[in-house]
Image (cartoon, rainbow, N blue to C red; front, side, top):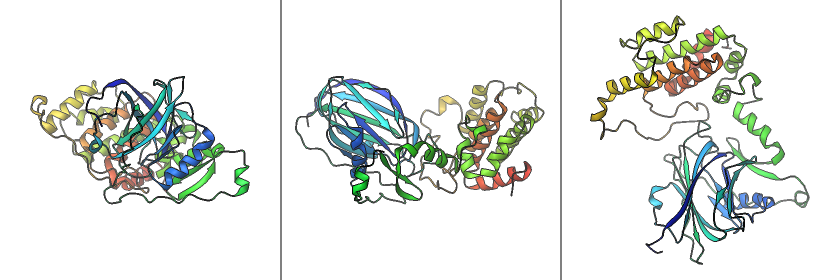
Length: 389
């Protein structure tokens, strides 16, 4: 490895990644071979390639806003493997179109990246993981980097998988033997990995399966445009269905109730500058009194009270990263959060001009604030708003 490598191009794209996998193709790849690559990657994690495409498994089941930085170098770039949780290397050809494509099932694509034609060594690195499988949200925040440099015939460095605290590394899956009949089926198949284990489903069924997985059942049409609604429905289906049937005054009352409960939980409801805002919110008055007529100012005041003047915080740690306690049964339990900050966010959500958005976003933020006690919140809201069984 040389020390004089130069980066000659860089692009950042965003991918709607799902089903724990994405594929990188330089134009020579055959989509019909991706299932074989998936089998190989599952048998020898975390990736598999054939020189025309590289399929990478992500620890997260999904990230609908996954950021990927693509870099082209003139030689093997500096080694910074210790900065990444997952790393894999392979070989990849880029055809005369000079385009790198990144995709994920069921048919989502990132913007194409211009890469000079040629044969490359490719390194794919990821970090920011919170758990294997369902990460508790559709936007868990993991980021990825792809680095390419001319293939000089050198050896590939060994792969690295994320060793999740308290869990470890998932086991490889043996490659299943296909029947002769499967070889003649026209439909593509994919390996689906979820909380029930691994199973094959037809690619044509992926969209419907994804929707049922996201919603914990059939999607609720009235909530389909609400970003956080699927997670709420998966956790408390009766409450989500009740919200879908609520009129605007009830939705507003639900949003206000969440804001008040979270402010009480966070211990800020009685602060002299917060209490008048909650009173105005409950009375339906707009705009809220200062500083809540400008949420940036309100958050600034909270930060000053919590962490001191801004000029004194240059070396102060105001956030921490710990092992997530998130589970399939309570996706809102993401570990310690700064509750006062989330409480102000809930007030902001409750003031959204759209009543349904206000209710959904306020409830979701309140649930994350309650964390391990989210079931208590949902039980109280369910009793108050008539959805408790």
